[in-house]
Image (cartoon, rainbow, N blue to C red; front, side, top):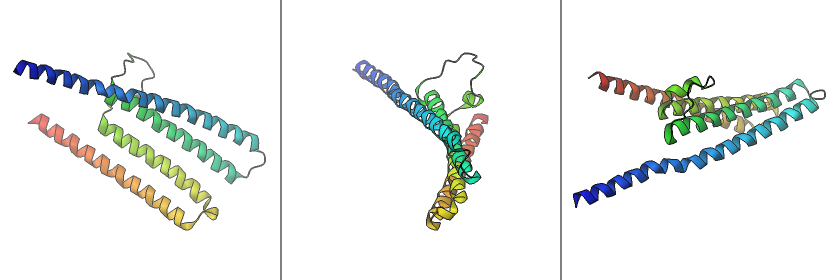
Length: 177
């Protein structure tokens, strides 16, 4: 009877472990979203090039900041796609490919969370900068709300980094005992 129970448990454990593959279509969806951002970037770049002669420096700066924003969101997508797949689904078998990102060798859920938080701060900072450049056309409440949200992102990233550091120190202490 115990043998039957252990076989059921073993099959259940295999099913639970296999379930990580249910995330693979989600990462494929993010790759499709990445393609949409490449299209959007090209469209905005073409728009910039078509109007560069007639726009003011401020207008050009706002469009360029929009392009930077698209690139930063795209970088965030890459971190989530590659880091998330590597951490939660399956190891990437890239051999000794020369273009493997350096951060991939030490990616884990904690590192990924901190990197994502930092990327969100960068994206939020670009949005805030665009708003401040365009402040004359912005509502003061909107500017204050955006600054507050940016501050919350900063505090969250600091909290995640501190928690990750504490966990790492705790693991190191346990390993030395």
